[in-house]
Every structure is written in structure tokens, then in C-alpha cells.
Length: 265
Image (tube, rainbow, N blue to C red; front, top):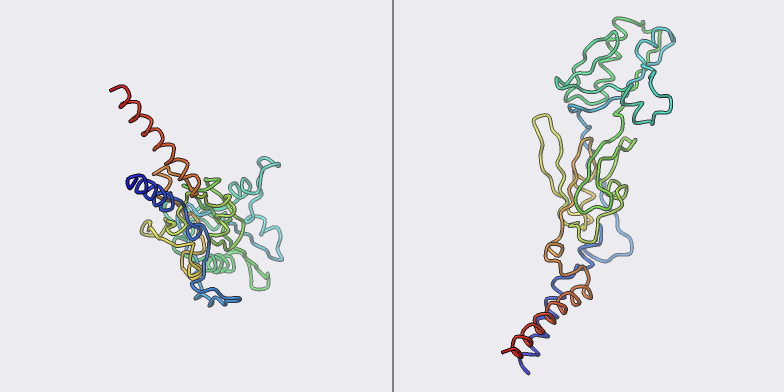
């Protein structure tokens, strides 16, 4: 009888230890329950500095429309091409030497520059060689969207591009269909590009403090990895009922095998 009680106790203990808790599934939890809470404003994020393979959209406007046409590429490819395809054809890719090649201006070193610094340099060269101050030259330089890749325990893994200047990791996850039940929200891995190489960062999305993290906003070419929880590798189930059913099936099979062995003996 004691052994039966012990077996039942062990079953219940394993069930509750193997199922996934609410705390592991809830995003941006507060340490204390409060009706309203104010999240302090994060320090102003450092401007993004261009990396190799970044794609830039550059447009020049001025009173002299004929001269401006030299610098504003017009795709002669597929007229039904998507926005991303047009940007790929008309945009300026940062090559392996950290340069972009602009019509008439030639190669321009941009690696490690901000888009604002690139705009100022292009405007400076245009005024020096092609336009006068009276031409009212207006240069626009933007990143051609934020490209990132998300893999692991996510509903729709893959590469995405968002045509915005800023994107949070919560928005990136939502665009990919959310993290699965067996995904580890407490330790999301971000592999980020830097001029000297790549760095690995971690962020806990179950804590409200994640919004103050310097890695909360996605940067171009980020690789976001969602690792599985231990429950997935154990295979006991994501809920208490699933765990109980799985373990009960195993115990039933073992008991049947033992009883069969005893009866044959």
C-alpha cells in the first residue's frame, strides 16, 4: 500500500514539474501587481551604423530636375515587381569594402557611418561638383527596411523585412506568429552584426525590464533565436494533463509488461 501511495506521489510530482507554467508563457511581467505602472524612458538609442550588405535608399531633389535624374535610379526591370525587388534593383548595397557606388559621384565609404552622416557627405559632394547653393539640394538617405531572421521555436521562422525606421523584438515576434508553447521566452538569443564581427546577446521577454534593454529594438541583419524549453526534449507534455497522460501511459505499459512477465514465469 505504501509503495502505491509513493508511486502516485511521484506521478503527481513529475506531472507538475514537467508542465509549462504561466510565468514561462507570459510576456513583460511586472514584479508587483499594480493598476497602472510607468516604464521609465530608455536612454536615447545610439544611431545605427552601417554594416556590409546593408541596402540604402538614396534620393536627390533640386530645382535642376535634369541633373537630379542622374542620381535617382529608375528600375527598368519588371514593372510588377514588389517593393523589396525594386529596392534591390534601385538601392545601394554596402559592398565588402564598406562602400556604395553612386552614379557620377563614384565610390563612397559608408561602413560604420550613420545614415545622417552619409546624407551630409553626399550633399557636400553634390554642392561641390554639381550644384550651387541656390539649387536647394535636398538629399534623403534611408535604410531600405529592417531585415532580420528569426528561427527556432517560432510559428513562422524565416527572414523578414519591415519598412520602418524602428522595430521592437515583440513586433518582430508578432510578425512571425508568436513563440510556440515550448519556446523559451526567458532567454531569447540575439546575434548582432558589428564592424569587428558578431556578438551574442540575451534578453528575457517575460520581464517588463526587457523594454529597457539595449537589445529590445531589432537592428538590420539581426538573427533572433528562440530555444526550446526542457519540456520539449523530455517530451512529457506542455500542460499538466498532457504530462499526466503521458506518464500514466508509460507506467501502464511497464505494469502490464511486469504482470505479463510474472504470469509467464
